[in-house]
Image (cartoon, rainbow, N blue to C red; front, side, top):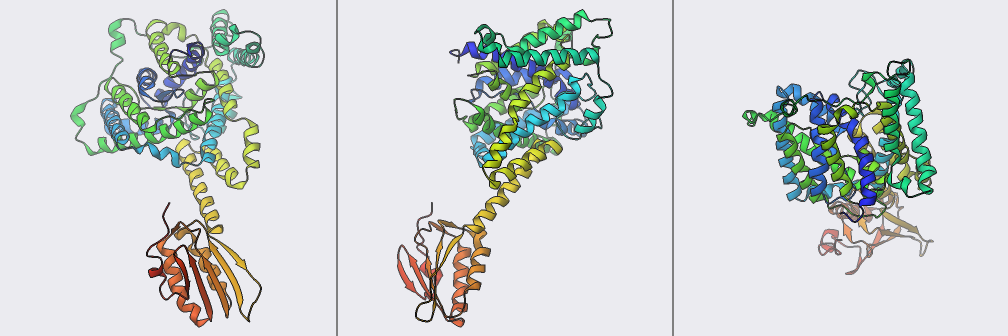
Length: 525
């Protein structure tokens, strides 16, 4: 883990700056104490990062769970009751890991995963535009189209143009210029610019700008800065921790919420794992069942000390990859940075303009949603492009899980269409001896999805036909298809259709029972 520390250390600093406002913003959007988001970020980095088998994935509080958390806190009668559901949700995730449920993530098409990454990239950019101009009415981390402040993604952008903060905008532009200069020019000039990351320089510039412009017309108001809770004493720091009220553990609504958290958090994690593995330059494969065990452990600990639910998060993970992170040290150390900074330098953190962090997230979003990817997906054909596009649009106009669900649904429809088209190959030969000679070769796998196509072709056969049905290449033949052939045998006699059935087991002329013929079916793959 320490072999790549020269890459991981700078990357962890970038992830820290990306994670800090998101931890606070997601807590705010969830209706939970601000400190709960930081707890989840710290545990997601240190504990989950250490236990996970992912080398580049980063965990923390997730925007996708904010709406569930907000509703559950009110419905369950308080935050302490909700924490019981978080602990139980973690335990259920451990059970998922033991039962090997991690394989679920592999059943999502590549086009949908790419659409998820692109959609999140676009959402990051759209959501950061208001913050870039110093309009912070919606908290960081609210990625849903319909926002917690009553606006939607686009109305928020339009409103932000009426409330532009000059100081915040100037330092955001300056920060973005630093990031572009660092990425495109300076990192290629000397190694020192690879060790000292552009985001760190942009943040330092933001802190300096804030202090130099205090009291002037270009000053940045407190509501446009990071807002970390500042305890006066050790006792006041400890009072920020909350603990679950286990007296309500027998309530059915607690268990329903726990299962919901476990299911949604596990699904988001597995999708993120699949996506980060695709982004990983070294193409390493994350053990998904181990990931569920790590996430479950993290959620149990987070719930026990007052933290929000945790998942692996694509925004942090992609920032880690883009910044050169090579091993899990980056994720773990970003958690350590969160812990140290919250304890030792909260006042310094509260001098960071949110607009500078918006500039950093702009770059992260752009690298996830480059225009060239749309061109590439289009060139791959409609079977890839349509599910990809639906996923992107769905994420932008709804939320992450609904967008992915829409993309998956379209992907399944595409599979059904292709399955319908590829269920058989029909070859029509010239007339011979007064009969049409028609050869139909069935595909390697023929399921009930193919019933419509095969029925259509059989019904179209003219009278006085010689049908040669070749199933030698067919490794799986569904019972539904066998029954279709059985039913067709009666029609064939009425239409004077002779059938020659060719199989690995031999040839049958006008078989009396297709069911008997296929009792010993070709080997199923």
